[in-house]
Length: 493
Image 1 (tube, rainbow, N blue to C red):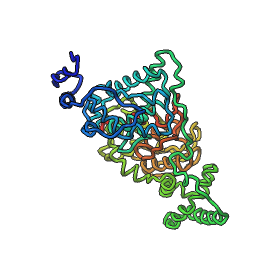
Image 2: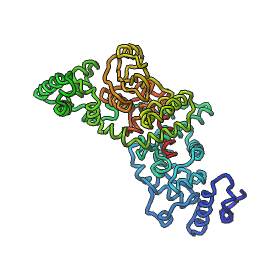
Image 3: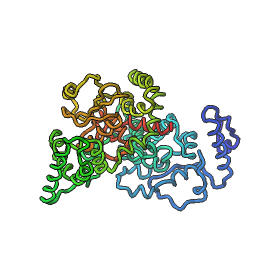
Image 4: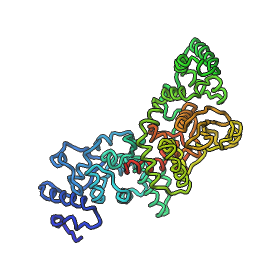
């Protein structure tokens, strides 16, 4: 371009940037340069430091941030929590990190335009930023620790939440910086592999937390039962419900049952946490495996209204998912599934497509077994024999007939029939709730799908731990595929 000093910037015009920037970005940049050159206090110097606290705001800091300018970089370092706040954090930092300056002045100008306008950068711009940042880090420290990279990622996300924070439907995923941290970590590992060096020091050292009480409110996961009187009272109420359950639905005192199910909640948790066999729990509390009472127990346990979140509040997100998967069909199985579902739209309407979102996600993630299809002639004995022979002993949904029109859907766990329902939506909610109620890990062949449902469609989003099976070679608690799809949906939306 021929720019040799700062004064040369004053003669730049939008068309000079060619294909480097869009015309709007180029115009914004030229305007920002002119404003900056007309400001007597402007300078093009260093980025932000991790050690020196930010003092009182200057006039340039209070002005709107300008891309590719020192005022812009000053604004970048003065938003969110301050350096002094970060220095007081409990997270240990290496000596080099205490005085490290994030090199905002080196980042692509097109990316800085996004930061200025609080929009998300393109993937290519983000990758280029990561490359520049990691090269700068490794020029100081060849093998930065994962904690150091996490602090840097957290710092950037705190300053530019709109541009980098992991979000879905307005909800922050995990701590919000995991995808950026993961990119930094992978880039460091890739660079070190190229140099044939050991990458042990850059791996995540902390494993995922326990899965039994994952996503639950601790005091409700293990409530106390203090006196023998309480225990006798539970026994009396439990026996009443056991006698009611076999009666015809019209003869059951369901109002009393609902009251007693709530009053015996501590005893239900005590039995489940011991733990007892599935058949024993079902014998003692048969109503726990009815959708209505399972969802009441789930809400008490997690604080989440599953039906409201999964059916009502996730409608828009489900439409986004359907649109994205339809436009990005890669696997033959996903194409075949959409073809089959589309052929029934005129008859069944759009509702069946929405209900089949977990099935489509499972196909997209190349997973299986959580939702299984059985011929219309299948009886429970046959389904039980098939499920009992499968390796994973976790709740599964068994659809008898067509996925989109079945009126008989069973939920099995091991060789026990836990519930029978009439719609796929009800079956997904019921099966999902049982993973939490019964302290179970997600099905190993569908853990990504279930985690996506958990975080994006249900809104259970713990910072630590996971119900998923171990990711090979990784111990990050959010699966990378969940993060990737969530960010794509957020970006496209």
